[in-house]
Amino acid sequence: MIKRMKNILRIIGMSFEIELRQNLTDGFVMFGIVIQPLIVAFMALWMLKDKGSDYAIFVVVGSAMTGLWTTLLFNGGNSITGERWTGTLEPLVGSPSSLRIVVFGKVLANVTQSLLSMIGCYTLISIAMGYPLTLSYPFFFLVSIVLTIIAFVSFGVIIASLFILIPDFQRLQNTLEFPVYILCGFLFPITLLPGWTTPLSYILSPYWAARALHGTAQGTLEINQIFLSWGLLIIFSAVYIIGSGSLYRLVLKRARVDATLNTTG
Amino acid sequence: MNAIEIFNLKRKFKTTIGVIKRQTKEVIAVDGISFDIHAGELFGLLGPNGAGKTTTVKMLTTLLIPSSGTATIMGLDIVKDAEKIRPRIGFIFGGERGLYWRLSGLDNLRYFATLYYIDTNVAKKKIHELIELVGLKGREKEKVEGYSRGMRQRLHIARALLHDPEVLFLDEPTMGLDPIGARKLRMTIQNLQSVKKTILLTTHYMFEADALCDRIAVINKGKIIALDSPEQLKHSVQDLSIVEIEIFGIPPEFLERIRNLEFVDSVAVENHDQRQILLVQTPEGPSAVSALIEALNGLRLGNIVTREPTLEDAYVRLVGGKM
Image (cartoon, rainbow over all chains, first blue to last red; front, side):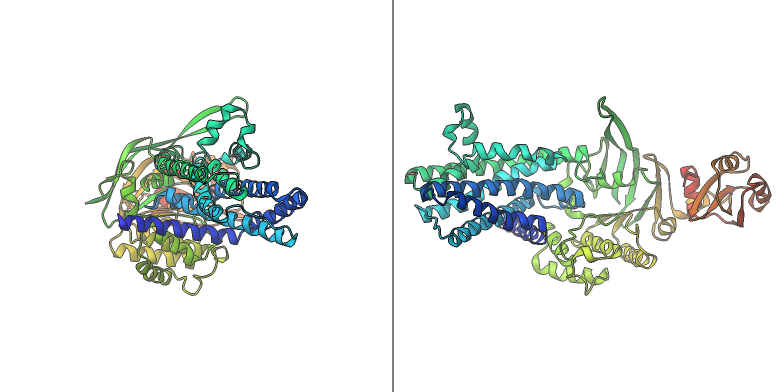
C-alpha cells in the first residue's frame, strides 16, 4: 500500500515536472500564463480604481478564476491533444502507469502555474498602480486557494478524459468556457441565474472554490459557511477523483476500440 | 514455449466517406491471422504498406482491441490482461513521433522510467547504460528537437529497453535511417537477440529480415500468406531466375505486355530517378532475355543482368509483384 502510494506520488511529481518544463519552452503557453494575465489584471484594476475595494476584490478574484478555468480548459485539454499529435499518447497508455494519474500531474502543473501567475500579476499591478487589494480573512483565503487547486485539478481530470475520448473535442472547447464561468459564479452570484441551474452549480467543485475565495476575500461569509464551502468542495472533488477511475477505464477502452489514441489510427 | 500466441485475430476499422450523404465504410486491416512466436525468437513480419503489420503490433501491445480472435503474450490475454502485459513488453513504432521534442533525451528517459515504476537509483544507472548502448552519450542533455532522425530512433530503442522487457515489438525501427545508423541499430537488435529477448520485428527491408530473423511471416491485405525461415522462403523461389533490366521510362502497356508473357512469373519495377530497374522472375533464366528485349522493343534499355533469387524476390512473388 505504501509502495503503491509512493509510486503514485512519484508519477504525479514527474508528470508535473515534465508538463511544467514543456510549458516553459512553449512561447504560446508562456504568453497565456505570464503576459495575458498581466494585461487582464491591468485592465481590470484600471477600470475599478474608483469603485472601492469591496467590489474590486470580487472582480479581481472572479477574473482570476475565469483566467484559471480558461488556462485549465485550453492548456490542459490541448496537452492531451498534443500528446495524440506527437504520438506520445500511445506510449503513455501502453505504460503500466495509470493515465489518470499522469493526467492528474499534468493538470496540477497547469493549475498551479496559472494560479501563481494570476496571484503574482494582480499583486504586481495593484502595487504598481498604488491600489492595495485588501483581504478580509487572509488565512482562510490562503486555505481556500489550496483547496481551489484541488477543486480545479479534480474537475480538470474529468474534462481531460473528454479529450481522450473525442479526438476533435477542441472544436467544443469554447462552448465549455462560458457555461462554467456562469454556473460557478466566478464573476457574479449564481442567485442571479434561473433557479433550475442552481443544482448544476452545486455539483461543480469550482463553484464551491469560487464561493470560498469570494467569501474569504470580501468577508461576506460566516466561519461556518466557509467551512461548509470547503467541506462540499472536498466532497465533490473526492467524488470526481474516485469516479474518474471508472471513467478512464471506459474512455480508454473506447479509445482502443475506436483507434483514437493516435492520429494515424 | 511460445511467448506470443495469436489465433484468428481480426481487426476492422470504420471510416466515413462523403460530406452531406455520409456513409460508413468498414475496412478489414487484419483478417483472421494465426501464428505463434517462440520465447527468445526474433520473428519478422513483412508486408507492403497497409498490409496490417502496424495494426497487428498495436493489438499485441494492447493499444488496440481486436474485433475478434485472441492473442496472448506470455500466457496473458491482450484484452483481459492488458495491465499485466504492459510492464513485460516494450515497443517502438518507426518514425520520429512518440517523443517529447522540447525535452532532452535524458528527461524523456527519466519520465518513462518513472512510468515503468523503476526505482530512482536503478533508473539512473539503467539510463546511463542505455545512453551508452544506443550511442547518445554526450548528447543526452540536448533537446530532442535538435537530434537527427537516427538519434531519435535510438532514443526510442533506449526507452523501450528501460524496464528490461521480456518481449519487444519493433515496428520498422530502421525506417529512414542512414546506412550506418541502420547498421548500428541492427547490431543493437542482434545483441538483444543474444540475450534471449523475444522480438517481433516489422520491416520493409528484406536483407534486414534475412540477416536478423529466425522466422518470417509475410502479411498481405491482412492475411498471412507465408510463414517460414528465411532459407525456406528463399527456397520457394529456387526454381526461378531474376532478370534485371535497366530501362529509361516504361509505359504501363509495356509492363502489361511483359506480365502477359507465358514464361514470366512476376514483374516488379524499382524507380531510381530517371531510370527504372525491371525485375522479371522467370523459370527460363538467361534464355528469356531475348524475348524480353523483343517485348520492350522501342524503349531505351541499359544493363541486363540475370541472377539468383533473394528473399526480396520470394517476397515479391508472394505479394504479387506489386512494388
